[in-house]
Image (cartoon, rainbow, N blue to C red):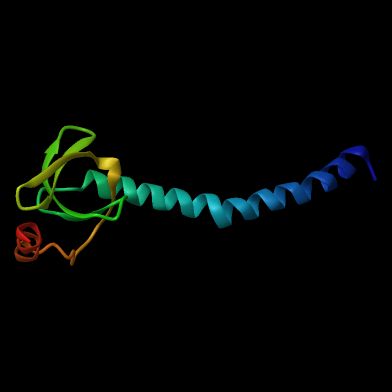
Length: 105
C-alpha cells in the first residue's frame, strides 16, 4: 500500500465523523436560526409574541432595525430588542380584561 493510500485511510474516519456531526447538528441549527431570523423580519404591529424571558406581549410599534415597543398590558409598554422575541404565538393568553383586573387588585 502506498503512503498516500495509508494517509487517506487514516483521514477517512475523521471525515466521516465530521460529516455525521454536520448532518446531525450543524445543518438543523442553521435552519432554526434562519427561520428565527425570518420570523423577526416579518414581525408586524399587533402580533402576539413570547419573549425569551417567558413574557407574553403584543407588538405595538416597530422602531427601525433592532428595536420595538411591546405592550404587556394596557398602558404597560416597554422598548425591547427584536432579539428578545422567542416566537410569535397565535393564542397568547393576553386578555385585556384579565390584565386590567390584575392591575386593579
